[in-house]
Length: 223
Ligand SMILES: *Cc1c(COP(=O)(O)O)cnc(C)c1O
Image (cartoon, rainbow, N blue to C red; front, side, top):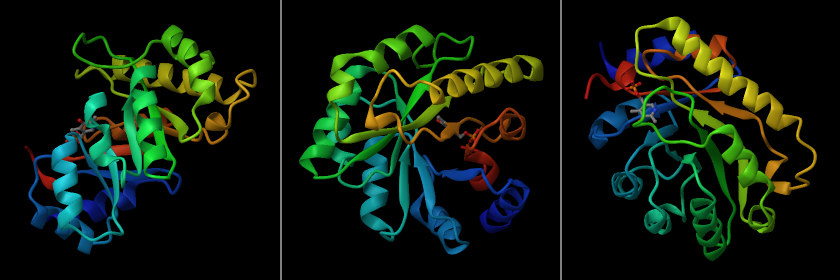
């Protein structure tokens, strides 16, 4: 199957309120261009240097999403152009993003990554850490970031009930966030996005309330 037909199959299966991030990590520019020429404009990468290289080479109407774990000292390289950073998991990182957004005279949209899996290897905040972050004075001072919502990754397992439980957990944290008033913070006014679901589990994720799916191998083939 071609990239174009994979993309079309997936796009027609998505409800209108769900945004597709085409995860193009490790794939060469001609593969991304095939998706671009088929109409795809949102691409997800998990390494900053790779995303910067592709940004330099490719059309400028692409929206670049950073979906991987971000090291604070590399934020500056993507700050001029990144559209959405999915994997924000600490106040320290948020401070760096805010600082470099300011330097570039812009605001950068972020998702806070929540730890929902039963795997040590996955990153993210737990509910307490999330609340601590959102209620910290440092967070309230940040003027150049917007928190659009949450991101999570389920455990890598065949057990659909387990995955469903984890997605439902993320959705419930998301719903509680939308009802928070006490933070009184501009950065939280735009909470609307819940990024969950990959090639293997995006249909289940959508059933559980996802509004943004990150799909790689089902579009571009295995890595
Ligand atoms: C690689 C990756 C994806 C896409 O995975 P596929 O199984 O290829 O669809 C989604 N989210 C994150 C954070 C990733 O690193």
